Image (cartoon, rainbow, N blue to C red; front, side):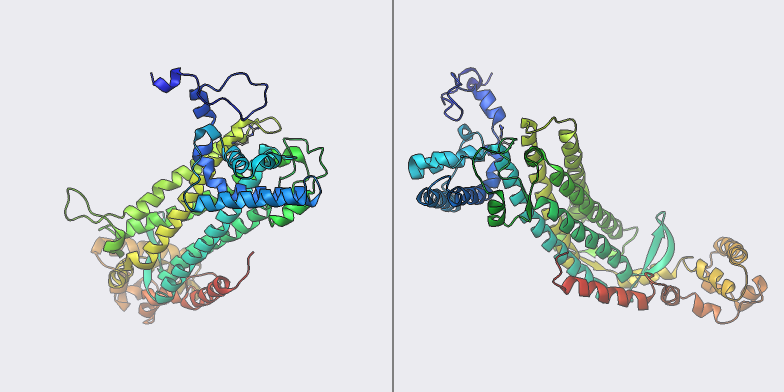
Length: 474
Ligand code: ARG
């Protein structure tokens, strides 16, 4: 057994009230401590505490001089942190105690006034929201960068054709730009969704106290304003125990990962020898330690893999909250690692996928052209041809089904049929059938709103560009 485990802690617990007679068992101290991860909240804890100290002075709960000493002392901790000099150990238990202790070392006994009219419960809720606000903004910026890369790729490939699939079977050819713009739409929803969620992350629980508010004449709107919150929680119990905002974020993060993972899966397929639609550049692929011929799509594979952990965090947070009685319970300390990991995972995946799409792959346009020219993905257009000449669509559809069958048996494509053969099938076929079934025409003809027709795609590209370059925040 670990020696540490048997010895009582050498740290007398000065953290809690005199009610405690003995120190925490070291194993329990380690188990209880969150400093190992909530150190990431340090900057936000300092900012939140500075706002609280200012409010205490503003309302006369402490003197202006005391307020200033607290604010300056907290600022000194920030400097120490930037210089790499603030490294609390687990005896501090969590970031909130760590800061308060260091503050008291710096400013003396007045440091002990910082926690007046505050609890760690409203404090940690405040810190987490401040943290998440920043992270959401970073992710929204990253989504915009990713979209810009998609748009410049789309711009280059309006007229590049790529097979379109349903059931992963060749269906109808597409403009490659249309395919890429589908991901623009998905990530646009992600961007908007994060903006909506931001409104609910951006509420201040500070001043909710432990659960019931406080006996001091605090001003919650004042701290909220100092911290740029959009409003305050109306109910103190809800303020300290609500984690809906974290769940909503994890839901949005999961959807981002769904989208990145779908694109990743496509890139993996496209890079395979079977598809050969893209070549992966050396800067974004890795080799095998044993098979010298290999070039592996590690980036999209990792993104696809990492998607699972973000989904897991969403599930974990839902289960964490289910059945929790009001108000704060220590279970809530478990929200942080999930949130931190989801944030870093989404951010790193967005960064990697953006680089991958920007400079990590090249579309093999000649190979794509061959692909769309050598299949039956123009069959619908033959049926549409007849239907536009008055033949009922279902009848035309059945007829074309028969031609596909006989052509397949003869090893022919639709474009290889002679005019006599076409006319033997149906007298309405004329020489313009050949032009009607070229891949370019098949794509161009789908000019319905939102379709892959080049004209539609150019319009969609323009409106996407307008969205990305506008300064709208919602
Ligand atoms: N480290 C704690 C957490 O993350 C801070 C709040 C502790 N509150 C309490 N009543 N023990 O949840």
